[in-house]
Image (cartoon, rainbow, N blue to C red; front, top):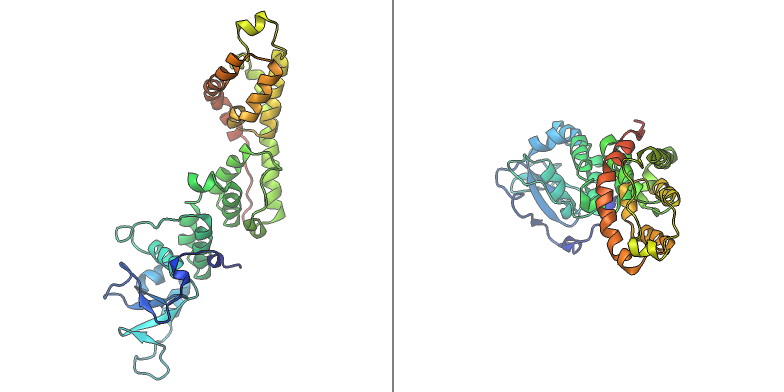
Length: 310
């Protein structure tokens, strides 16, 4: 498994020649073990919390420990055993924070998906399943999903998180199926997982044809005004307009599609509307989409994304 924390860059990349103590709250004198990171930062922590979060550490601490003065004993500091770990301090700080009681340490900030993958890799390594599950539950936050939806999908899918995978798959409906580019996280899911995403996208697009039944209740706003019609400018029939809306939604099956400037501009050009109409149409469409969003979201919610468990 590729260690994503190789991608994490911060001040800790400048390694200390001598070990230094981590800042609070990982410098408490009541701690009973020290984890020394790859960049020589010592985190004082508690065996009990590590054991509760990680079978890996639970098994380690269950082994007979040599006495401090035993020549075979590992390095100690402040009379505590020192355990070297391969993670950098920026990753270890976040990982240990997730292992701490909520009343003791705030939930750490995950600034980007590189950090997310670094901490998830560490959680995997130490068999911290609940920590990993909790971290995955955070990746559908808007600042992740809006910036890198395909990465969010691949990460959620890799960890078989059904709710998060479905949320990401639904967000991907904003793009044509061919638009998202390759991301490294796709290497960790199967071809059949990706095929299910493509199938889900196609099924949601197909269901948009049902809008034909809704036009009487949700008529598309006119693209021209009285002046346009008087001058005989409008060249787009209602039927063509409706067909164009459905085709756009089949390609990108979400209500945001009808607010894409590209689609609005195309419709305005086809309608031959005047300048006054061109300025008013985006506002009219925004109001219309808010109304149409309810039935469209309902239709999409009835299409289920399949995620097989391993």
